Amino acid sequence: MFDDFVESYEVFRECGVENPLHETLRLFDILTNGALRKTDLSLLTHKKIDVHQVAKKRKDGIPLEYIMETAVFMGMAFYCSPDTLIPRDETELLARVAMDFIDKKQESKRGLTIIDVGTGCGNIAISLAVYSDDTKILASDISPAAVEVARSNVNRFKLQDRISLFCGDALAPFEGAEYEGQIDLVVCNPPYIPTGSLDKLAPEIIDHEPKVALDAGSYGIDFFRKLIRDSVRFLKPGGILVFEIGEGQEKLVTRLFKKTEGYRDIGYYDDGKHVRVMSAVKEPGIKPSPAAAGQDG
Image: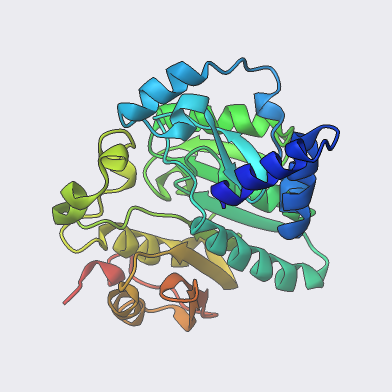
């Protein structure tokens, strides 16, 4: 794609087209069905870029998103730092699945309350808020530094009245009668890398991104156990839990759901090759044991 972009620019320039860069961008915007015009690059407007410094840091393995302090997700630009994972294209599937659920639930013409567990830079919470109307989003992260990164993005998008931020492990910040049984949707991009596989990750990931957001125990399902076990207490009857998984983890996660009283209608969503998102609906009238999902055979 980059070679095509450069070639197009050179052809426009050699043919004497006025402002060849602008015309090349317009061409690729058309070829991508308008994706470029939807991309929010406003975070870059006041930045002076020293390309030599960028290249030097990139050579040292620092991810480009951390160098530029910007990551793009769902066509929007987010402030991003080493305190948070870098939002990735594959997580857009999770956001789209959550948006579909929001669409169906908003047919009832009432406001929805959503929990975003492990919000990181806030990209999922903000994307859902921007996409939907009349939703209240409660976003949590175990890292105080990550919460502050998310706060800066929430403020930038002027969503302080719709997104509330909490610091704590998983659903712990929401313990108590105020939230239990009151949530329409729990969405999460959890850690799912087995501990033994961390050293197989690319150096730019394992050396720079927060390990707490990657490491999920021996089989990569420790966080899933906790998420499935606890979410059922917070969801309304008919409420939905939806989260991202790693490649090939759907069988293990299905077992966790089946061992946990309170869920039905397990859903699987693939990226064209692998199942990367799963969901389940809370059964009505079920009060599961908090330890129900903690026993995995």
